[in-house]
Structures are given as structure tokens and as C-alpha cells.
Amino acid sequence: MANVMHETLETQAILQRMEEVRCDLDEGVQEIVEGARVMGMWRHYVRTYPWICLGAAVAGGYLIVPRVLGRQPDAQMPNGPNPPPKGIVPEMLLAFVGNLAMRCVSSYALQLTDKLFATQAAKSQQDVQL
Image 1 (cartoon, helix red, strand yellow):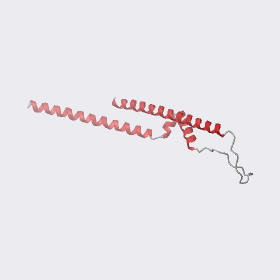
Image 2: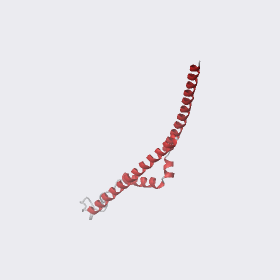
Image 3: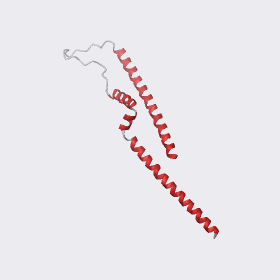
């Protein structure tokens, strides 16, 4: 009889612990859903990191807009060949270096953003575990 009571108490303790785990799991899922909802709102990032967003917008605009490599023919010149523009090599070199610098800056900004999100995700995950 004592053995049966011991098993019943043990079973009740296990069932109670399972119920606690279910409640904790439900709270954890709700926090994950709320975190995912916040991550999907772009306005949150603009309010939280305005300079990074501004830099990303400028870099994106710079990379998206096509650049003009030559001069447009003048309307006054009839079908004659255009003389090569003077100083095109320095302009091309400057454009290349500028493009390279912007890509480096945007790559660095993306790396910083990835690190920031990784640390925030780790911090929120630690908060969930506590």
C-alpha cells in the first residue's frame, strides 16, 4: 500500500512538472512570436538605428542608380563623331575608387548590424531562459 502511495505522489510530481514546462513553453513561444513581429516592422529599425538606416539607404541608392560614362551628344553637332572627352581616365578611376569605398562601407555596416542582431538575439534568448 505504501508503495502505491509513493508511486502516486511521484506520478503527481511528474504531472505537475510537465504542466509547468507546458506553461513555460507557451510563454516562450509568445515571446518569440512578439519578437518576430517586431523584427518584421521596418519602422522599428528606423527609430532604433536611424544613422545605419540612412547609410544603407544612401548606399543602396548609389548602387541602384546607373551612372553615365560619357557625355550626351550635343544637338548642334550633326552626325559627326564626338571627340573623346578629356580626362576620362581620372573620372573612371575616381568612380571606381568611390564605388569600392561605398561597397566597403556598406559591407562594414552590414557586419556591424549582423553582430548587433546576434548579440540582441542572444540576450533575449538568455532572458527567455531565465
